Image (cartoon, rainbow over all chains, first blue to last red; front, side, top):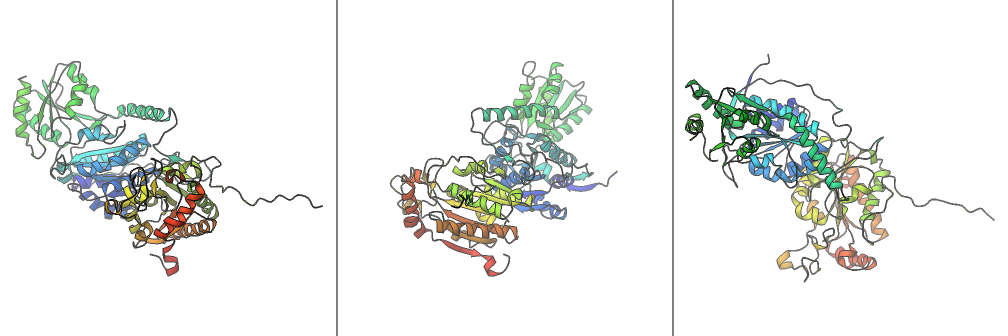
Length: 352
Length: 256
């Protein structure tokens, strides 16, 4: 068993990226993700990679586009207002099949908001975020260990689908320290992407990576290919089901709020209440099928989010023909405790 | 009587694809493309090159040069080029940008890539208008010049003076070569090629950022015939945008 290290979630993301063979990191300061570029500025250079503190989030995301086009594993990280600025390049990357990993340590919004945790970027993350019809594969870790593990996986998925993959955390995940067990995956090696990456037209035809399709039918064809890709991603859904089997009420929550809700569920179980937790780990694709299965068993649902109601739309869509979900919001700007969730959970459990 | 001798005196560079361009008659993009293609051939860079296309008329450059290419969002080519070069420092990286792309929406990206001394080359085509979108006012539009968004002529008080990019870029620490040439005449085209060669060499020799501004004609949006457009470059553009080398570290005998 590997030695445990005691680190922040932000550092877990950075270390996960390095373990996954990330060779380029492009950052820009914004709270609460600064630990990632700060850690990377030395660690990725020590690992033989490149660090650039870009002039803006816009530039950082476009540097990522460039590095990704060469088939090199690369990452950028930011927090909500900065991720809004990255949307231009994210749309271009999705439109031109460029793999990359984008980290968003969600803070309160809208606008400058605050620097505390929030989940207000769920829509932006799961609906593409920029212009056009596209999707990112979105992972929502709830612990530092998961942040490490899912960041490694994010790189594999980005290259498997040639698509940007997002790690969506929040200020709780990023700033909280906890023990993790680092591990090293088997890496794909130098040949990754060698059938499409840009490395000079030597002994082969030139390659072109672009998102402009002006010929008649060409853009429709590209959109069709992208949709097929998103369809294939449905096979990647991940979720945690905790005490759901005999539960009368299922709490749906993701990320840090999922973890806090789990504490509430555990405590209420001890008091004899038949409650469980369903925690989506992939937010896109959303784990709709397993949720529908639970709905068909006649269970009630309560969605808790650190926003004014975003994921609850996906929960309702998943089970739209058989059940509905109550919703309890934690307002961005407030920090919830497990105890605060007990009353709304009891209320939904009793069907009030 | 001697036999008729055939001697090939002019040919298409290997790096330039044999196909008609979409450019208007009298447009200088074709000349600029050819200069780039000739240098890629002469410096044996074709197989090592990655082109960063930008937004504007030249977005289709990747259809005309026989090299790997990626398309950047509007103005972001220097950032995309930074990402490509950092990921593959062994490759030759080139951006090709117009004045709207580089000097307006992409001002932050060009300034910082130059200041960092990214080992990339930037070919900056300045024709004083947004060409592809139909001839709107650009940051380089001359005072008094009429465009579709300054129909009464660019006004100094409201729209400011045209931006002199080569002068600005040459002040930044990471720049190894910065020069402004013109494509209006054979003599000036030769100088343009010399500057481009210098900029390319600065990247190959790991000296720093290379920047070449090319004053170019856009007869369609200037609403004048090609010959008149060439005259306009000489009479109106060159006096405001003086030609010459603004920085050359190879002359100073050291890396930046």
